[in-house]
Image (cartoon, rainbow, N blue to C red; front, side, top):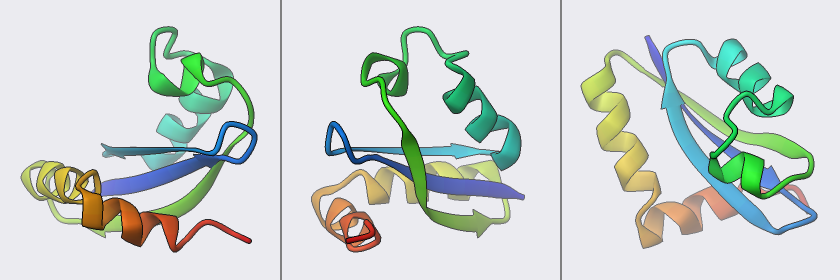
Length: 83
């Protein structure tokens, strides 16, 4: 199983959308700053998990990630930002 997820940085008002086969490990890596050159590392601050979706395989995960990164996908993800 694969996960598509969205993180939100309230301080910077930024959204990050990604996919992984180990959601807990990936969230820990974002939090610990293990991705030195990543979007989340460059935009320091607290990243909050705002959306997850589980799919059966990586091909579907990549397709859905790309869809969520489109304009309409970002509108959908933004609707999950806590007010």
